[in-house]
Image (cartoon, rainbow, N blue to C red):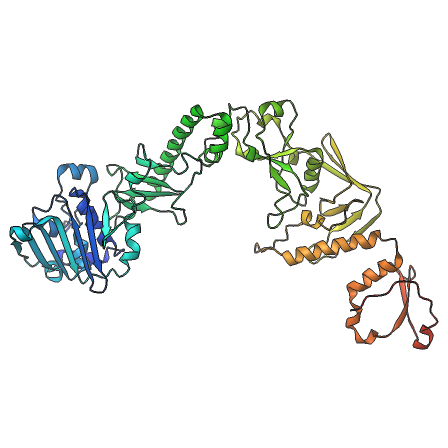
Length: 549
C-alpha cells in the first residue's frame, strides 16, 4: 500500500479566508502588485459608506488575466522571482474581502463574482475598445469592509517606495528610502537616528519590500532607526507578510548590523572632529551601541560621567536628585593622573554607605560612573572604590543617645559635637550635617533640619510607592527631637512635648491644674499630681504657657 500527500482544493479555497489575520493585508497586496509591475504612482480611492475600494497604478499592466486566479503561482518574471521570492497569493485576499472584483488593464477587463470564483466557476475576460482602455492596472472592489482605512493608510505606507495618493491626498511615507539618509549594509539599507547630532535610539522600524515587519511598541517617529531589508536574504511569513520568518534570529542579525553601522559612523566622526566635540556629541551613542573602546586613546573623559557632590546626599530620586551636579568641563587625563582630580566609585546612597558619601563630599572627591567606560580605559587604575574599603564612624563629644519613634523609621539617634569618619587612610570630621551609618543617625552640633532620615530610608514601600507624607512626618519628628534634646529652657522643652500630645482633645482634663515633677519615680522618672481648684491660685507660675489643642 502506498500513500501520498493530497490537497482538498475545495477545503483549501474555503478555509484560506481564515489564514489572513489582518484585513488591511488587502491593501498591502495590491500595492505590492503595483510596485512589482513597475508603477511610479498609485492612486487609491475609498468610499467607506458604499464599501468600494479602487486602486489604480501606472505600471506595466496585466497581460494574462489567469494569473489573478492562479493561487501559489507567482506569475512574475524571472528577475522579480529571484529578487523577491513572491508567493503567488497577491490577489487572493481580494476574493475573500470583497463580493465583487473588477479588474481592468490595457484592452482587457474582468468582472469577478468572488463567490463564483471560489467555487471554481469560469470567468469571462472581456475585450474593451481604445476609449475605455486602462493604462497600467485598475482594481475595483465592492462590498469590502475597511471602515477605518483613512486612519490606517498612512501607517501602512510609511516605508513604501512608490508615491501613493489616497482620496486625492499625497501620503507622506516618512520612512521611505527617498526621504531618509541611508547607508548600505550587509542586510540592506539602514538609516541611523542620531548620525549628525548623537541623539541615537535603540528602537528600529524594519521594512521588507516596503512594508513593516518589525516595529517597537514605543518609539518616537523623529528619533528611530529605519531598516529596509534585502528581500533576497529575508522572507516574511505568509499570508499577511507582517512578520519575518525566524524572527528571533533575524532580529539578532539586524541588531548586529546596526551596531556595525554605528561603528563605521563613529570611526569616521572621530577622524573629522576634535576630541572634545566628538565626546560631547557621540558619547551616549558609543555607550548605547557598545563602542566605548573608542574613548580609550582620548585625553579627556565625558563630563557626564563625573559628578560633583554639591548638596546633602540622600536616598532615592523622587524629590532629591540635586545633591550632585555634572562637571561643567570634561576632566582631563593630566588632572586625574597628577591627583588634581580625585575620582571615587560609589553605589547609590543607602543606610550602609551614607558615611562614605559624606567623606567624599567633605574631601571634594568626584563620583565617577566607571561602568560608562571600557575596562581598558586609562582612567580605571585611578578610580578609588570606596565601597570596597572598611568605614569607621564615631561620635565626638557624645551628648545623648535615644530612639526616634517615627512614622516610617525608628532609628537610633546620637547627638554629639561632631562626627568622625574614617575610610582607609582618609579621615573627615563632619560638624554641619547628620551622618547615617548602619541604621544609626549621628547628629552633630550643626544639624537641625531632620534631613538625615532621608539618608536612612528611601521612603518607598514594597509596591514602589513613594511615601512623601511619611517622609515629611519623619523629617519633622527628627527636627523636633533634636530641638527638644538640645533645649536649655525647661518650660520650652516641656511645652514642646505637651504640644505633641494635644491634651485639649481630652475633656476630662479641661480646666485642671497639675503639678509635674521630673526625675523622681521609675525611669525615666516623673510624678504627676492633680492640684485642687481652690489651691491652684496659690501655685506660683514658673513662666511660659501651654498651647491650646
